[in-house]
Length: 496
Image (cartoon, rainbow, N blue to C red; front, side, top):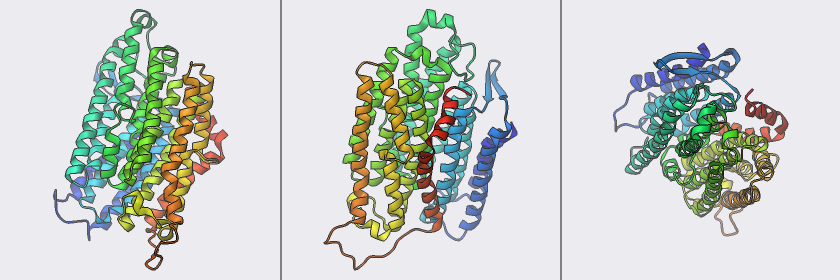
């Protein structure tokens, strides 16, 4: 109990402390001589929060109620296998991106504000992972938007402000759609506590089954906004390019997974897959995910701005996860949760690689990357390995997740969609190779007319390279031990 609370409220209070203790003017001096105390405190707070988050599942055996919003609406926390999986991803990515920020943010203004909200975000993410019922989850889902928005509009430019407002508008619209569903679920369930298999009353299913299906669909669309599902995906490619690179890594690897976690909770733990399987909700949802997979890959393939290309890639790759959840069989669910880890580590590594390139060279467009492998070989090797993971080349985790997703689709027995799913996943994988690997080819083999005379090594400092190396290695590690990881995920799927 205590470690759950500490993992949530310690970083929130630590973030507020940084905002007050190291407050800076709204516009003014860049970070300078007073950086060291700020960075030391932030690093200590990040490590302590990670320790609390790792310790929470080891000590918390049962759920507990913190307080009641009303007599029947408790703020309730409980740790299960699904929550642990998402918490593991969040802790690793936020630690790596946080330490990467210590170098990257050196020339940014208002660093204390960045680190303050970063820590608050850490606490809110832990609360989401450990939420034990739908009310608690929804409360922190809304707080997630409010705590992450300052990272999007951090540089204060007009473009950043408009991107932040767009992110806020889309997120709130999606959350209100989910809230609509909660109102009706309250009358149709004995409890809103997450329970494997669902909590719908049999009488409610019998009398109001059609309306409950509509409710489920609205909630899927609402929570799907955070996960970038078509047609509410447009905030992602707008928000990522304007945010600092480490913030983009967290957005793409972790924050969007809050939408995925929400979908997991409502389909598997509130409505139940038995209620949704074989209905029009499943069919329409699968169609939307496949549209998003293909559309995101095509837009990424055509995008010339590096970080925006990665943002469109996130739109596509997240819908791999949603597609597996929509198929609703054991193999597809294992593939989805495997993809949660594989995509999270890979995409964080890619955004940090992009950030290192921008930090050292100032280059932001794909066509400017010619010869970058000669200047930053370590960074580009990490980019290459992470890219292969996103494409789904063995022995990376991306291959394992896509294998399970394809198997699950073929076993689903759904007319047309059972075969169409793997075909679109394969086409998307080819497009992924088409928009990521040319940077490697032109980076290491710039051509005979490349001017080598001004060549200089521009690798970033260890504070930037070590997090990149860690995140690049993790998809390979989970790909080398797929049975072990799949076994753990299977326990999560079965609600153990």
